[in-house]
Length: 608
Image 1 (cartoon, rainbow, N blue to C red):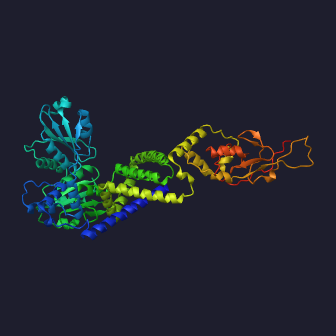
Image 2 (image 1 turned 45 degrees about the vertical axis):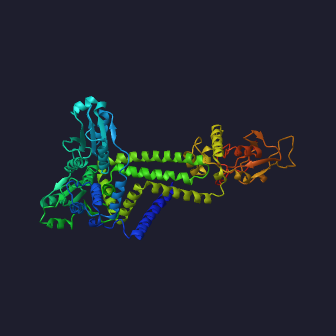
Image 3 (image 1 turned 90 degrees about the vertical axis):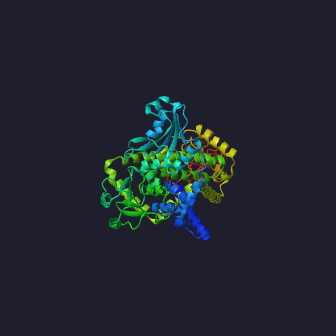
């Protein structure tokens, strides 16, 4: 497992170096970095509207380019990385419709009314009526709101007429669900669109107005001072200082996703003449996005990858103030990436690789879930609140560094390019496979084909089903020789998959002839002559019978000893080992593993 963890960390380091290489290539070809600021004056009217679309600001009624440019400047500084992401997002908005079709009341309740930390926009189609938005306009609306994490759906009253009468949906309309309280898992309220105009821009403006109403808005200096220094309710706060009528839609959407974790506050400074309060708290210019924590303030937008967009700020806030589900998903991804390394580390037949992979995936995921159960139980204990807060404090210290901003930027980059991530992971795995083959070049088993491996696997399975039961006389002493062997047997039971073992070691096992002791003074008729133990290798147990065939050793017959010390007919034990049973028939000690030397009685017992 440690090798897999090492290879995984090495892969992450390679991704980090590759991202820096891409930045260097872009800088060499264009002379710009992703963090370089862009002057909105140099952008076209279409590009300015694209930026406003991604930030969630309405521009209806702004016919001149100057007004649109000022709106972009008042909502935050524009970087090259944000401009590239906005253009790419605009090109990818021609995808399929991801809207949900509700089948009835229970389906609607489970997804919409029971969802406490999200926003839904549902088009209700009354019975025997046309929808409020046409198919084309509804598709545009879905694409417009989905980039802010707003989920969409369609409820046709013909599928559940009773529920539509219960709700009073007698005509086609639009319904928006928004959490009603600021507490996590609070109530949900349904808002019905009551506007006359059904253009996409007007409906979006109606939605953003309702969502923005949940954010605390500060318009006076005294109230700002009170909210700034008040730390009792929520220690972590996200402030937006801007000259806007209402906060951008992405800022409002994030306030709902982080309900109960981070308090979002919008400070409208349009009519402020005295800015001494802003200078007192450290706000030098507007617009500014400032995260206030018990450890201090952090100005969002000054580090790599900190763009004025939903995905960038979401990654930043999740790393600063994560919840248990975020940590579980991160551990799940890490564990499965480690498990997939077995596909390249394991050598041999292709089927063998996938069998080991499936086994590793099941084992690792089971252990992960079992490990998380006591952790969740401990987090519910009240006297661990101080430990939890201290852990979050350390995490905030680490996540506000420059290296952490690089990691978040790389995470955003590779998550938006999954093909690049998978191809680099495959290339890294093939390199591991190449070096593993070089390291195990002497192992003949790695060249076995699928049929040979399946045949060997079946031989293992059938041989262990009919294995003779070991004697219990030497059970305790056998395991005392090597405690690690007990752990290996517990980890790999008899009826589980065992690695294939080469048979080259059989020719190196000690072989000699069984002879009787020449005693000229002994009377042949009085008693049988004793075996000649002087010719036996050191460490071999004295015996005169083969337990495989249950026959005595004849004079001058070939016998063979195993590392455990037990001796058998050479022909009997070779057939046993060649059949895939690489263990002693008596004590089950591996026949290819040396046993620690221990003192034993070397003289036979006197039968008299």
